[in-house]
Length: 175
Image 1 (cartoon, rainbow, N blue to C red):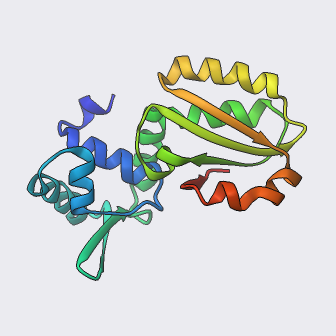
Image 2 (image 1 turned 90 degrees about the vertical axis):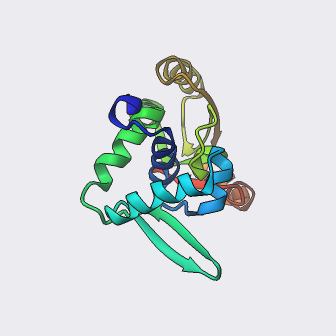
């Protein structure tokens, strides 16, 4: 879907990385190494997206960090397209609508960092959640999004006691 809309593979990777979780910011050489492209090619993409207003630039010491401009008028649409491409919208829709009392949902590790690794770690916090239903939904969602989903469910009390353990990992609170 994104390959037809955007012809640059590097631009697609940048959109996935920076628009999946708008709190993620990265610098040029880090992105070039992660995507296995030359720093010059990466700079060209970053400059184009920055000049168009899609990315913010922030200088910290010797580095310039880039992140998604959540104030851009197209941010909600681009973020939605990226989430649909990854399939997180399907997962959240299933989870929230059918499994019981959900307080919050976190995406952990790779996807929280904006890396499409193929394994989505999700932490669900809530009381009276239906674990069997969650397993069924994950299986269905995995077929749709073509990615593996690993779910962890904690009660609110359990999460309150151990939240520091989970929130030390890269995380993105979705709900």
